[in-house]
Length: 264
Image (cartoon, helix red, strand yellow):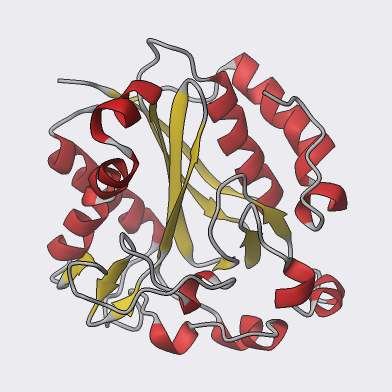
């Protein structure tokens, strides 16, 4: 049985959350235990996909005037709203990709989310299994891809990956609710809020602490594993601070996708 390292960071800023994800991926070495990280968001925020064009998709000046935090992810996918959600990060050795292939890895690493939703009494499955119409869009919840999870024909949350020589990172979000009133007018394009679901919309009352514990339980049951707590190491924390200061708090990266730090 492969044991997984667990990192529970609690709520963080958009910039810090993304800096920690990248620091963990960059620090991952051959022989390291796979990682599960769960975290929240201090305030309502936005995350942009690696190739997002926020100035075309959002009324960016309005986002700034309302002081809504945002950060660009190092993974693909569209623009996603955060706030009342728990996000997860999985980091596994690069050998897993060679063994299973990219698509199979996506399916495999999303299985614990299916377990979570099914344990909550929901009929959850992958979009391709439900024969949903697949569509890529610049706004995460407005599009549906093969391994997105759908409930009652509607998308819930989102997931994205980044591959490096040593490891694969997958992260995503499990939404308790969405503050549609706050976010709707910030977008120039369809938000997909009406075509997606959250725990609140599905009539499931759950707080962030309960969801976190439910995610851990579903994870261990799905992969027949155990988690051991190990917070950020000194080197990981130092790298996260550098990435936070020099990359994730800079418009060059967050708006213009200019990445000039610590290239690997």
